[in-house]
Amino acid sequence: MDARSSAGTVNLAGYLDDRVEAGVVRVDRSIFTDPEIFELEMERIWEGNWIYLAHESQIPNPNDFMTLFMGRQPVILVRSPEGEVNAFINACGHRGTTLVREVRGNRADYSCPFHGWVFDTRGDAKVVFKEDGAGYPDCFDKKNYGLTKVPQVKSYRGFIFGSLNADVLPLEQHLGPATACIDLLADQSPQGLEILKGSSTYTFRGNWKIQAENGVDGYHLYATHGNYVMTTEHRRKLRGDADPVKAMQVGGIDKKKGGFFDLGHGHVMLWGDFPNPTDRPNFSQLAAYTEKFGAQKAHWMVARLRNLLLYPNVFVMDQTSTQIRVFRPISVDETEVTIYGIAPRGESAKDRSHRIRQWEDFFNASGMATPDDIMEFTQSQIAYKAKAARWNDVSRGLKHVHFNEPNEEAASLGIQVQSFGTRLEDEGIMAAQHRWWLETLTHGPQG
Image (cartoon, rainbow, N blue to C red; front, side, top):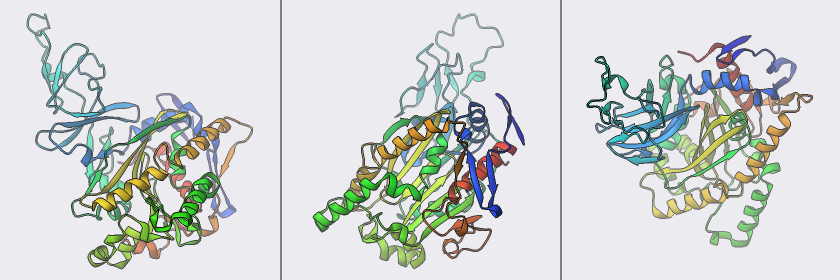
């Protein structure tokens, strides 16, 4: 089971020991440390398939732009004067320096800081600085030096995705049942969603797949975030209704109904019922949601924790706070994470304030949870280099996992899932990611 990349041939046999019938599901820790595997991931996952780019509310106006990365490729995401969203490699068509160096802004053209060439928002080269008398050959035409366009850029419900590979599945087919999970957030306002002002960006010394696992890891809550659990419970007892945050109770959530869905293509969702749904920022909308969408969907929208991973690089989380968490690999052992608050447009000032306080409390870079996770990511990466200790076990909850069977909770969303678990702490949600990871590295992206 070999796969060839620009770094050479990678033998993928044995990295995932997936023997469900024998009760064995485990992952070779070298998938987090091997540079050749990382190179193959960049080519086949990050630079060969759909990845999340941004939300449309971040570039709402003509000529708005933001800069980001698709894998290792620097990209400009721009809204044209006609309102179309495009993306270009952020490299000057002349000599290749980074063209746009701001994180975001608004302008009708981009002037290269190196040699002064100017490009418009369609990627066309408009001005060659001091072109007259420059001695270019007769065949020279600046039309041939435009910016390299990202071949696939599409949106679903305001969430923008791109692919550097033109031969990929249509976006909605790639997302599959995950679209219904996105709808649970997008349907919370007829005006759509908006990214809130401000963000938190940080890096950790660890592989990107550690973050992909952790965002849907219900098992680590008490051990890693015990301080948060105890602090919020103490604050609730001390302040009661006077508590300005009214944090969502995660203590005891493992005793509530919950589980996970394997949505295909690496997409997974962790879900569970909140002990205190009345403290959700959108609880005031429960009756309206029930009237519009029915009781089952309204319950999903208001009373259930949902951590949705749109593989490989974004979490859409509606739980202790509502956020988008975007991550990108810098190297095999370094990852950048950016967290944005996201909210329904038009919600009341009271609900918006409540939402932001909850976001600051748990997920902000200085909140009570993120530093805990970063420590564990870093320490995991250190220990993964210990070749004498080979395996990560992800068999917890294997007795609860069902493959290709009907599921009542999934059916309430109108979807079928590839597999599901019936408890919040089941690790089958990690196994689902790694199965798709291996499939993609072995055979390449579907197209």
